[in-house]
Length: 305
Image 1: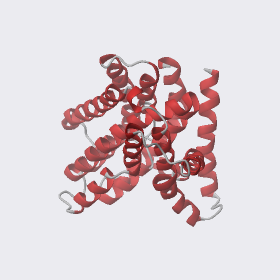
Image 2: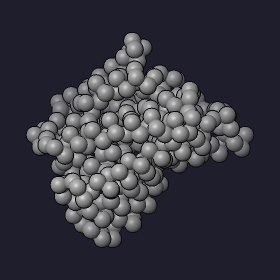
Image 3: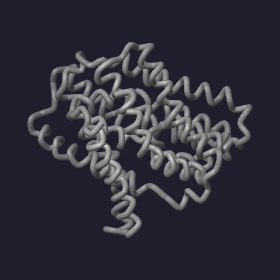
């Protein structure tokens, strides 16, 4: 438990530091506007490409790990759709509930996986990210398109292509190709990608913290607590079942656990705002789930670790 806390505490402290620096407008609003794209499109992909290129992918438990993650997302979505008729919330609010359940903060997940299990943990967790991200995005876009404010908006197709071409997924595929082909990462690029990768997680956590809007907590209500429950309690319970079904152990098991206990990512707000979901509600859920996760993440890791 002590080891887990020594890994988790600095992660949440970096989130808090990012929020505080953004609040104080240091070093400036333009810095924070550009930081997340820098991490998302450059630093994190460099980290993933190098990790996969330098491991023997054939030795990884890829299909069972990815299968368990996909099963969790599909089951959670099915449960919410079945309960839709019994929920009193409107369509846009329901889309926020779905997004909160199927999407997760990968920056925190990567940091915990790397902190607890080093490169091996980071690599196997990347498989979960690559499996879940396109499916979660696909579900989110279609649910917002059906229940959101702008039903039938033609811009959905363009945005759908954008979310499916996620740079993290592309990076994993490139790294897997370099590994399976035996090409590897050229010696001149390996140290360059290593330096870029070292910056990915701390800067990513600062960016995630800067994206938190605590003023949104003024809009807290039943829907917020329901979303936090599904993300931080229901999904971990589904993960326990998926781990049992696929008979996962070791790093594969822990990668699924880490994915399942993550809070809602700040990027969900952007998707809701662009497509017609309840962006105000989702902003509140993001902050609330992150605050609750300070307690639930170490608790779940202690129970399932």
